[in-house]
Length: 494
Image (cartoon, rainbow, N blue to C red):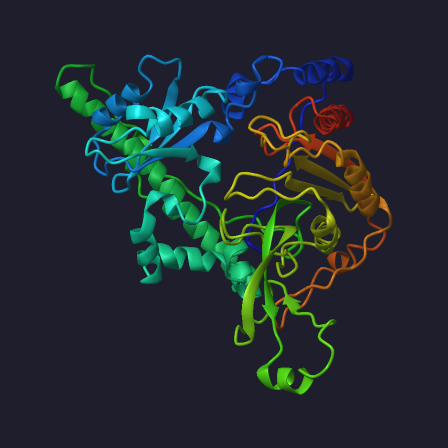
């Protein structure tokens, strides 16, 4: 319903299947250089565990508090260099907000963190903390140990600003809200209120205004730069393309409509996170009438996101482990997909299974605020032709990986295998059941096949992929190898 266009297929020329299959399998053992640079090198290339996953530097970050607020960049470099002078400590990166009195530094190796914290806290005069230029005591702590009282290093003034209703306070208060179904649809599928033809017209206008016009504008700008260089004698004169002078330089055709308007997705990626739910308590009158009764069985009704937005009886908000979409951004928690018109029943049914498992599991999902957690994402693919569903579970290393807590609180190796079997049993145990949807008022399903999309569907494949900085499994993953072989066979048949 968000107006996504279905990917078009191109028919490849017939090729020798034996040669193509060998070449495709061979490519699974290699990776593009750019991919390595963006995703990080493999453990085989980096025997040092401190840089095995160099993109995750959380365990190497330290925050130094009570430094001067206004420091120039060159002075900041000199300041951090003075801290580590005559030591083997190496600072690879610094971050200093211009109006805050703290600095976040990233050290080269994990084993340098404790030594650096000790240096700041006890490396001053007579074993005391190091001081800033005005004589104030500085102190350091791990970035992952910062709590709400630290408030990003802003201290009491920052808290007072929050209580005063500042801009940051509004931003944080919005994070702890429970979104209504319409708010979720507005964030994930912003065009859902319009008809499908209006969506296509809007997308055509967006292609003209934000794509084709910008392309022409950038090309003309490049020619103006070249002409300027030619007038200064830096290069020879160049003639502008004649087609740039026409009235409509790039002709954008109307988008091709999809045969399925609703519930058309065959792949869904759920983020493993924490969902905000509203706890509604009994009204005062009801409480007075039952206050003499037994209180042992009292319980609060939990209203998940997608309620009608009535917050008159809401007194508290609770976070529970769940799988869903990030309708409120990276820090706003996940939301249920059941209200989205582009998400089919089978995806919501898989989400129900995951959401019934996660709250009872000792393996908790990733929390983006503290950079801790086990489950990262769940990729779900479906084939309506074969009535089969595949689930890819992306998770952190069972032993905690690089930057694991010293107390072993994030070492789940003792329960990982048992929990893995439990999740596989829940996913593959039976055919999927039709979920309870939360569509907008007046919505009518026009695609009969999607209205019955859960009938006979079953999860037949579950893969567990250890998180390595990638949102998708690597080229050597069984899913990718099987996909490449299938594509080669399909090309040969064509």
